[in-house]
Amino acid sequence: MPNTSSNPVRDEGNAAPPARAQWLALLARATRDELDDAIARCPDAPEFVWLRAPQTGLVMVQGRVGGSGERFNLGETTVTRCTLRQHDGVVGTGYVLGREAERAVRVARLDALMQMPRHRNVLAAGPLAAIAGRLAAVAAQSDADTAASRVEFFTMVREA
Image 1 (cartoon, rainbow, N blue to C red):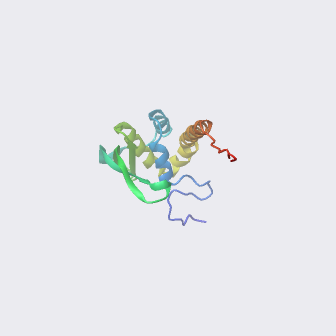
Image 2 (cartoon, rainbow, N blue to C red; image 1 turned 60 degrees about the vertical axis):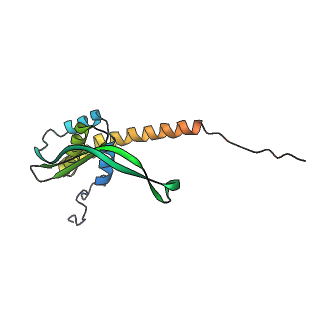
Image 3 (cartoon, helix red, strand yellow; image 1 turned 90 degrees about the horizontal axis):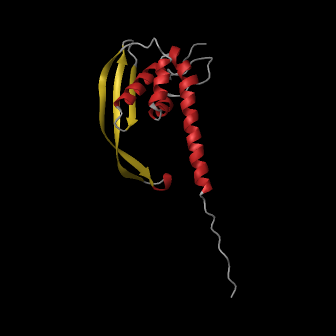
C-alpha cells in the first residue's frame, strides 16, 4: 500500500520517525560534538548552496502567566539562523540560541539530511535518540535536584 500521508517524514512499515519540529528542537539543543557525530554518519551528504547564510539577531521571548494564562513579553534573546538548499533540492533550516554560526550550519545540514529517507532512519535511531536521552537525563536530574530542596510547610493549631 503506498504512503498517502501528506507528511513526507513518515515511511510505511517503519516506526514513526520524529516529526520535523521534534528533530529541529533536539538538534537546536544538541552540543557541537553531537552534531558533528551525526553529520559523520552521513558521508555521502550532497553539497549545498546558501539560501540564507548564518545571521545573528534578536527574537522576543514570550511567557505565560502561570504557564497557561495570558501571554506577556519576557524579553529578547540572541538567535543564529541559516537556511541552505542541497543540490538535490532539499531545504534545511537551522536555529540555535546564541551566536554560534557553526552550530546553526550543522543543524540546517542535519535538518536537510533528516528529510531524506536514506539518512532519516540512521540519524533518528542513533544520534537523535542519544541527544533525546541526554536531554531527558538532564531534565530528570534537574527535577531530582528541585525535589531534594522542597520544603514542606505545615501549620500548628494553637488552642486557646
